[in-house]
Length: 138
Length: 127
Image 1: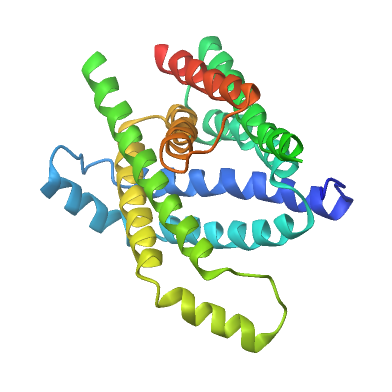
Image 2 (image 1 turned 90 degrees about the vertical axis):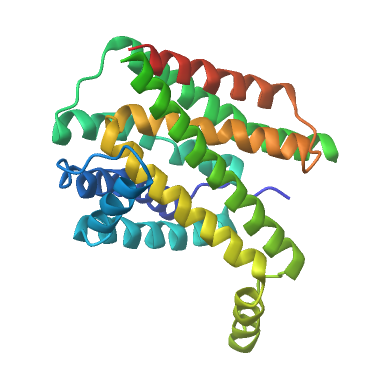
């Protein structure tokens, strides 16, 4: 039995998870950027670096957001199939580069955008294939 | 520059690998409990109790934490947009694990999708 009907409420939840997923990675990157003076080259320096990062409020905001996303997904997946939910939720692959340009001032060349589109298409195909397999098994 | 890219990609592979191991432990934890969704407070608490006394859950969580730590090190060395795209490598590890360990059968669509992800990661890394 397929749960395919994307209601407005589910769509909103999935868009929220896209945005929150992007926020998680932005928060994590922010927590690390505050420690530019600590570079990691061996296990001891990694220890110092992680100690500093784990007291950053940004890191904990990121982890809190992870929990919120987990709750959203637990709700969404009781109402709709994974093969339908994942493609809608994959737009963080576009949102993360956009946030990187706007808020982190990173530069992205055309080739990297092309690569990102390949990955996005790949993720959508992989998630659609889970539905295909269920149909074949019937 | 080439050497730095190699180190970053290796670290991303390592964090993706730990993430995959964590997912496998969590999947096997849930499967072993035969969970059926029920909105009954007593049942939910019983389920949570059985969950937290399952060692595999904790193994899964330990690998999640290791994966997070390596990920933070990656972010300190690479641009977010690159690291995030390259992290889709975990799709490849999960594909390999489900194929080799869980013996799942792959449809052509799934091979195509996994191939596109590999191509995408190569393109993203070329810059």
